[in-house]
Image 1 (cartoon, rainbow, N blue to C red):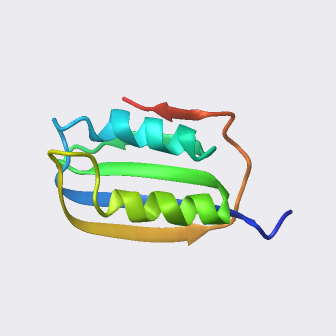
Image 2: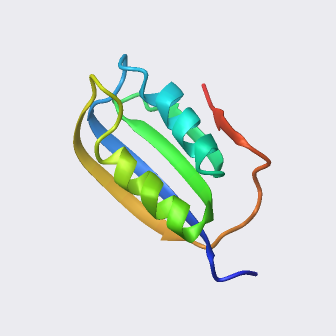
Length: 94
């Protein structure tokens, strides 16, 4: 397993639903070459898992702290784990 690969699970809180957060997350993750998924949570947040190059994962976490135009991110919980390689692409889950 390569040490330059990383995995992170994030929970994003704030005004993050109804502002194209999932779609913009998908596009940003794909542009960075990341795999994983993003979805809305029942409590009004957004949850995502990103896997890929460690530097790209870090860049994605930074993006999540800001989000797309129209979003207001109040807090991001970040939990790093071991890279698994389980995802073929990046998708929106429903």
